[in-house]
Length: 413
Image 1 (tube, one colour):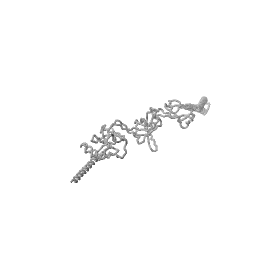
Image 2 (cartoon, one colour):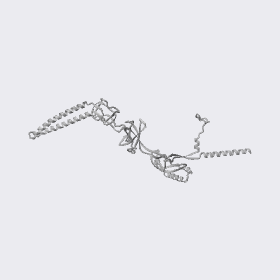
Image 3 (cartoon, rainbow, N blue to C red):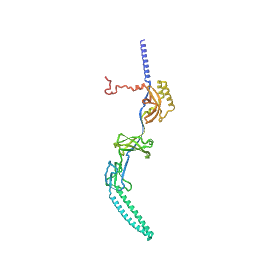
Image 4 (cartoon, helix red, strand yellow):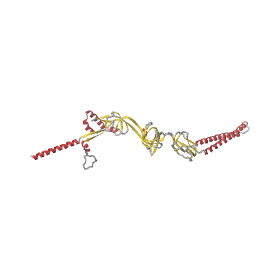
């Protein structure tokens, strides 16, 4: 009898243990719907086109020479600040002076010949009028006189040209600016027979620079005059320089079958940190707006899972259910593609959610402007998932007594 009682007690304990384990298992697998949310907030949106280019002075003049000769004297060097009309260099004037003296002598000779031919013409004319000489003699005198006048005019023109060439032997600065390059040295011979050699390159004003940026043909349609530009150079990577688009050149530049267009960006350079020839990495702001209501674009792409939403709807009032079911049924009939995201945001207020139709505006790929439908600070859903207590239990780890412990990691006393 006593043994039978013990068996009954053991059986009851085992049944209670089994029921307890089953109940705990049921509790551990109880599912819970969780949402990941973000806030609607005030922000700015901007879209940019990137381009690389070369920094140049706004106005650069190549100073050459009109005459050939030997450089006798140079008065400026690299980085010299010059004024308009300042002497830069002189070419040896000896051969030019000799040519000028020769042309002066030719003018004197032509003037004397003209006087003689004129006197002969006057005598011949008087005799011809009295019919004392033949018409052929008179015509010859006229011809000689006209030729003499032409020779004198030619001699004077040659003399004037030699005077100008002599003036060209002195090289003056055509503008105020800074000498960027000096291409000759004293004693060097320059020849201007076929083309004008460049002696100096002068930049007008280094406090105003420009970037000649190469924009891809796929992006050139977005570029407009007056757009704001930010760029940096390798020499000052931590500094953002600013500029403005002032010119879009129509002539294409083709390099290895790649078509680009040159966009001119003017930029102030008060500290003269920007130097000609530097490479600029520019961002041209094609769309830019501030103080907008914005939200993460992923919230607009969010569509609730029907099965998970069905579980969650059990906690909602009937009005919310109708709205959500209507939205989900519309999604099922015609889902929109990734390139045309839904204009619906799912707003979370406490334990309730509600779909709201919104009107979108500008986008930069990560944020989207919301024109109507929501307010600043609204909590919107961008993801949902089902979690269980067992998932949470898995995160709890039991430390092994054989595993090493960090110093001071024991229980506090």
